[in-house]
Length: 114
Image 1 (spheres, rainbow, N blue to C red):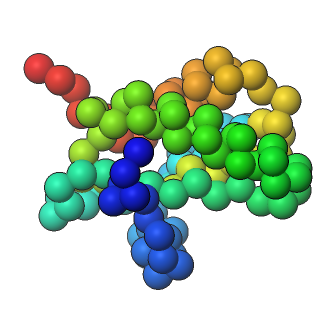
Image 2 (cartoon, rainbow, N blue to C red):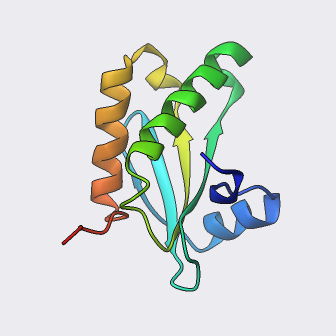
């Protein structure tokens, strides 16, 4: 995934949190804003230290980036932050994928292909 698709600075991430709409479940939260001026989507992943050690946090972030890359063709004009809660540390990849995709559908971040 290209770095152009990532929210990088604290200012950009704070802007999303300040103007957000959000959807959550017990494992993840997605905070998002729709931005028509932007040609593609941008995202960040937030995962706290209570989740586990650095290896497990980075592993979960890689999994989420992989999930988002599978649906990147459907994501347009949106900035979002995926918040990972510590309760999700016991989930398998398939459960993580199902949970994240369900939240993306709830937030209507994807555009239907015609």
